[in-house]
Length: 173
Image (cartoon, rainbow, N blue to C red):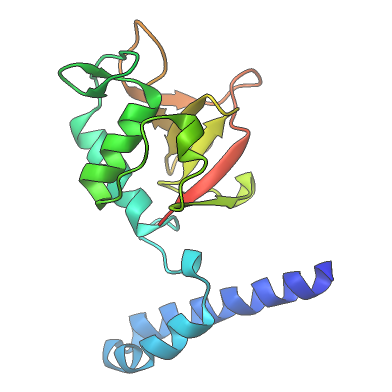
């Protein structure tokens, strides 16, 4: 059963790679083939430029431009009031991608927009949960996330450590 699932996943990845190659080689031919390619490719494979979802990439772009350097504030969801971790994620996806997530990590985990992926599949713009009480946005850099960490700190990047690493990853669309 497991080997059949792996084979199906490989077929979807091959189909996605073929669709991407067709789009790069012959844009007109890719436009004609796009509906067939989308029908055979899982939704997460229709990604943004860095491998994560388009929504996640747009959210991280917005957060890095508008929230970097703002202060942490529990319950906050704007730079003027400060951000907490879920307030930053909510604002980034709302303003950057038009997807309004709940302002609570616990409520986010129940959102229909979040789709669980393995930590090894996490790409730029995916949400990284640290337990069920803290969330940050994955970056393109190895083991680094962007988020609002805790009181007395500004919103920015943080590198994982043996004591600080995500326990679950979710892609948003």
